[in-house]
Image 1 (cartoon, rainbow, N blue to C red):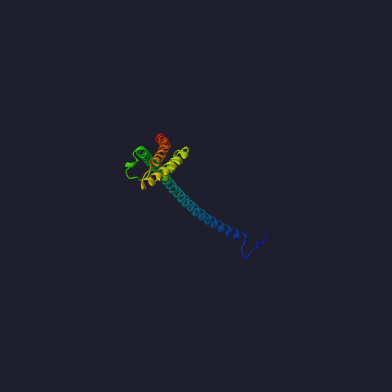
Image 2 (image 1 turned 120 degrees about the vertical axis):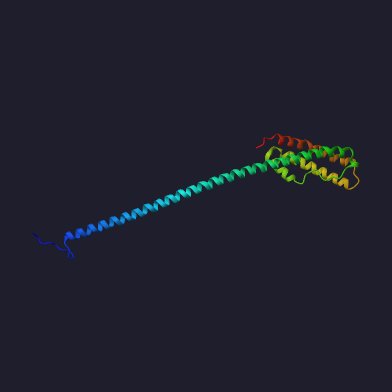
Length: 192
């Protein structure tokens, strides 16, 4: 038999036993690390699922808000359209009422407040948005009614002259046709 070689005073069998114990300890440590990692990954997965659920709820709430806003916008558009129709009908009646008075009975005119409504820019906006091909008619109405108003106010401030009042009546008549055309188009337009 050969004499045993010792390393640091230990035999090869003892070194093998130590290595086996160290390997077993490392396996246990690695198993613990893997177990903790697995638990951490499971917790992260649960948190991700919870976050995804919360995100889905937020998205559903956002969709509901968007639908609500769309409905409000449609209601607001319908309201503006209705207000415009009412204002245009009022203008049409006003022109129908004033044109004969200015043309024939200009000496007995009631107080004059104007032909274009205060919210004319809003009316123009709604009509241009709903019936874009009526822009020229809007300009014509505005031009004729502004001219008629100017003539009437000027003449009512002093002694009215028949020919000037008749010119105002002609402007009112010239504005009536495109006004009725716009009114008819807007009334016949499909609602949303």
